[in-house]
Image (cartoon, rainbow, N blue to C red; front, side):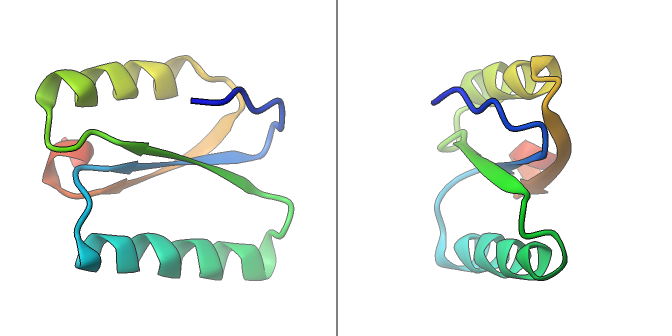
Length: 78
């Protein structure tokens, strides 16, 4: 994952790629950009792997530049 020095970052944490989940991601980004064009996004995808989901959750928790999280899918939300 590339390092992003911006302090206005929203993490998007997805359980797995699926067209319905991808639509949620795109709609969320579109709506946030309307009112907050300076916000940047970092995408994470666990690809259905519980270990990977735990690693991603730790990375998000330790990144002090992340101001919000969108969890898409059951695994990511848990």
